[in-house]
Image 1: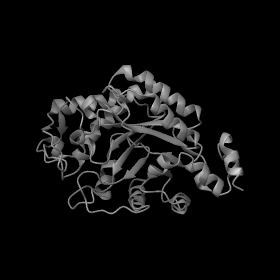
Image 2: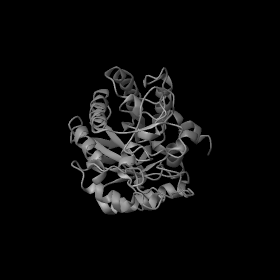
Image 3: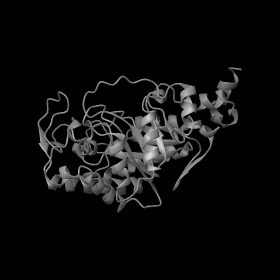
Length: 339
């Protein structure tokens, strides 16, 4: 079955098609963005559960770019050693480590920092004072993405995911609903992302996998769409190696999630760009997960909350579908005793 076949993307050699997507754990301490023992245990046990690709949670490229004070960061070289420990833990359990880089923009709730946005438009009912970014602010953030990519490489990560989804800063620049600027960054709303991709490319070699997570739709009239995203992706100065297709997060929207509700968006992005896609979105039904992979709707399947509930989800699937020999050796007796 395709789900249990290897997947190769540049330097990435995945043993299967299952992904642990980035999910914030809000477990850094002392407002320093550094890896804690919890992170080692959290990611390590899921890597041991047979996941092919582990994407570490949204990691701030600047202090004000984190979602909360408890989020991880890579804005300083002193954060590299902790990330190295995390990389080593993931690799030791035969999974491939990647990291998601973020600036939260107007969705940041960090204390003692400025809350930056393309345009000073509030996110829902956030009781925060927003600042429209100057061109100097933009240049600092662009540079920070590049430096964070450098640190990620020094820490040993094998892939980088740029967070362009869920209403965070890159998404804010791209959506007509949150970017009302009249300068170059409003006339071409993709310019900010273009500059980030170019800067990251200075520090992340072309032979190493670089991809982006997107919200393919805002689920709101006048927002981003799969068509607009396809145009943006096809015009980037460095073509992405893959697209992690999600949706929403810019503002409250009238959407009711159901298992697999974002898979059609992934199909559309894959068709429009010709790139491999990671599918996500309430993938907690075994038959749905396997169908999405076997049918070619998606190239990789990301399971978020399902992996929080059950770190051995991939082992469960392997046993259920007859791939008993690939179940993590140390856990095999738990499955044999079920027979």
